[in-house]
Length: 585
Ligand SMILES: Nc1nc2c(ncn2[C@@H]2O[C@H](COP(=O)(O)OP(=O)(O)OP(=O)(O)O)[C@@H](O)[C@H]2O)c(=O)[nH]1
Ligand SMILES: O=C([O-])CC(=O)C(=O)O
Ligand SMILES: [Mn+2]
Image (cartoon, rainbow, N blue to C red):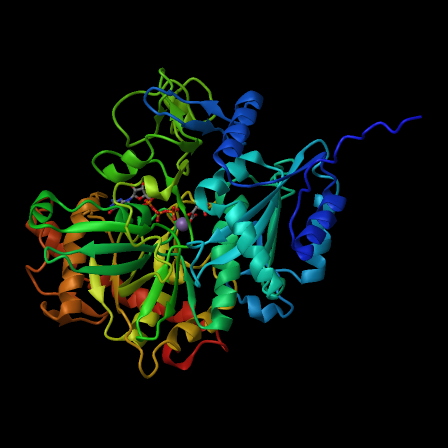
């Protein structure tokens, strides 16, 4: 018989990097998917993913006339936030994870979670998602590969990172030079809150996440890689991976100061990063440029300054409270090509949340007819995912492979009492102490009670991948000969009056605080010493949206509350002995 020409095998899928192919093979043998798809990050691939999710109900189309390219995802009602009690740092030595992390021995952790992964992708597609954290050509950027069975995660990773062919090419190039990529394995599993773990193996540069599809638990490039694993690497290699926004503040002379600010989850980073100065400032030529809204990687440059990049390429922002008054830049950004998660919808299919405007939504975040008796229409931790460059204030320097030089670091918490609007640390060591002592009231970004005061050093309590004592020592180590370190400030936008109202108007008015910081950097504003640090002089910060009495109160340290605050801070810091560095004892 004549040989019948046989069809060609499908084009080779996979990578030139044996280590990557081998790992994908191993994971496939464990998870047993029906199909494997290597993501190239293309527009066509994104469209196909969205079409598939619309077809199976994972996404709902929003009003395409008002919100082109916008879709809604309703998560499982039990899967709406990060789960800190199920998040582990699995180091060989328990002490290396510190009292600030939940710990499990690596072998036990692998065994526990691999049992859940066994066969979990049957009937599903395994997606291989190569990504780069940071500008693709930046020496500060780092790569990883996430394997996931969730098309929602793939679509979000495409918006949040540089995902696809270019990242794979960099991973292959670096792999040939012996440089490892971070390996993240994720499955949404059965979404059973009792079968859910987010595990980190910093010594193996590996992450395993099972049982949640929610952002911080499932988009492994974000909190898991860019903070927990990266903070570990940063300590070994002499840099910092921080939960900070980065903004550029351009003054009327055209000079731009870059400021990095660490506030805990849902405490105002996205809002500050996209601030629009009040009219009077705009008329003079002040502008704010957004470099990043959540994560900052910075390292000392040859000039002694700290140079920072935003490792992300998108925003995963809190929806509630976002409005034309509070954050018009965010609102403009999310008008198109945005994935909304757990927001409400109006009767004409537009996304809606508390604080947006005074319309009444038709359906709540679970898709039920809206009934105020069921609680808020949008989940308090409902989110938008969108490409960063859609933001009108997106900085022209955001793609700079060298990053931007940082002039000020700002720490801040959500404190209804005690802490004033702003103060300056006396020097770097004092600033590290201020950061280490940070407190904040909890928010809906993590499961658990909301509004409970807890210590959240540098806003990294849920994200530092190692012992806080070692972390503080690492921060202190940047103060060395030749260093030109940024000034350190502390802010609190959330001080309340006796009537429970915020004393300070916040949002755009926060520009007045930023201006004072720049004046301090330039040496053109005086300050007054106080028990906690340097305060603005009387009259240095005023706002037409805030009465004289309220401004006076908000600028003051609450002397009555201070002794207890100091006792609590001392107790909190003692918890990191014996690794607590002596300047913080
Ligand atoms: N009162 C007041 N509320 C603010 C201010 N800035 C932000 N908020 C509110 O705080 C909530 C969270 O703000 P975001 O800017 O999204 O917080 P984030 O730090 O970026 O949050 P994550 O994405 O979870 O890290 C929103 O509801 C905002 O409206 C402010 O200056 N004053
Ligand atoms: O990580 C998340 O899920 C969202 C976020 O930015 C945070 O909680 O700080
Ligand atoms: Mn965050």
